[in-house]
Image 1 (tube, rainbow, N blue to C red):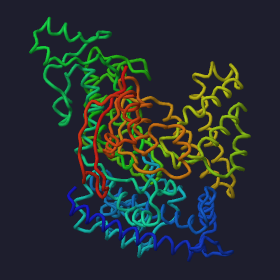
Image 2: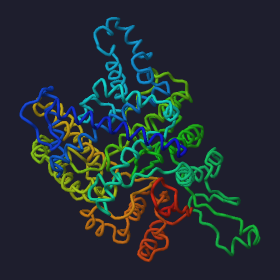
Image 3: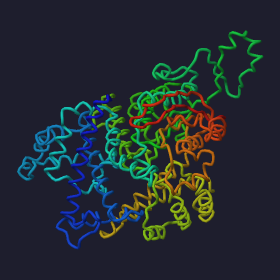
Image 4: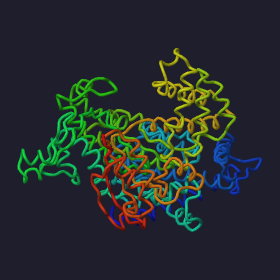
Length: 640
């Protein structure tokens, strides 16, 4: 996207945010008597059930330590952000032909006409001719595959812009100067960055270092240019598949920045490269200099390749990884010698006998098995999930599958790292219902260990912090529940998620909102632990840099003693810990770690011991929009 286009989009986002925050704040005060101070008056003209849920949402933010005014401001900001995302997503889906026209032509669009044909009396029944009903119906349908954004039961989606504000928002969305941008996959990522623009400037004026998880998230959301994404993904995921297939892959030509050289010799299992003297004796000195020996990399079923972005933002790395995985699945399916997958014990071809079967399944397989992301900002997680969903729809569109015939994208592995919900009484009430009782001890341990999740994010080593609690819970559960601690977590995870769903749905009307907020936050914590316990072939990142939030410094000093000088250094160390043997980390960070004295132990212990550099690009200034930092992009491989 060119700079002029980005500036136009920035202007749209600023106007849309201002419009929606004023509109939603006005509703909170005028309809529900929740004042800007956070104080709630005794009576309100609006729906009492909606008011009760809004008050629960404000109180939910207060339980995490925010004051009343700040809690209300967060509610308004989150609601405005969700509204911008929803309508931008509708516009992007509409532009791609995924939904009937419901935004582009306002009240006279094809969608409204279709609705009127189905229910001829509709225009007379609704002041707007049924336009809002159409928008809500489309959102409900999209929520089947993208609940994180379109679920209208979500507290942050409770309020709907009133007619005047809705009309103004739709006119902004349909402005000719941004019309072409709705066809671009990266537009939604730029919307996130520009929504936070004014906040970032105010934060930096108030404090040199981030003061909480919200500041840490928005200060470090810098768009990664496409060529940097390609460089890092080509030389991690692309290179791993290239080596598995001994260079015989379409990725050799499809990945423009994949580093490969003439003279590569792929070694077999257990074979070491010959010593330098042996090479000269066998081949002659000039040939030996050209020979590049590649350590054997065992082939894998595509479903077993795991890719993680631990600071996922709007999902740019995962989107490009999706492109490569489409080709990887097709090559894996066509290979008669391909290994079986871990999940099914069968090959791709055995599970999907025809190419038609495979092509229909690929998008869902990629989102279910391959791509993972962690964020500390739930709003960014919305964006990443949306971006991947749109990418899956494009895959179906390229197959010629009409929307009714497309498989539903039921899940993605984008999780939010945040503390477990702050209402201790709800935790005790929930834990008392768990069966077997051994799970109560585990839930208590998780609750305590997740306290720093919002600020530490991916750097919080939950897999090790709850290891002893898992062992103790498994011991208490006994052989009737589990055959040992090794497989305890998979069963515990399933039972905890089922229990949370039951806990939320069995609530009385008075407790429904509080229980649902509790259950959603707790489920995110469990999903985060699930990701922490995985091991990955590829970890890709544009991580936060600079100083951490103050309350995490002691933790980082203890857990990352050689990487604590800068957040990005700790993220690189964490990425290598997550990698399998021969796995690769691809990162764009400040280049300071390569030469400053304070990073010497990091270079020795992380760059040259935990991993080894395989490609490095020194990029200098101006790479990441508005981030005044000299950057480097590099890939590290974890040794055998």
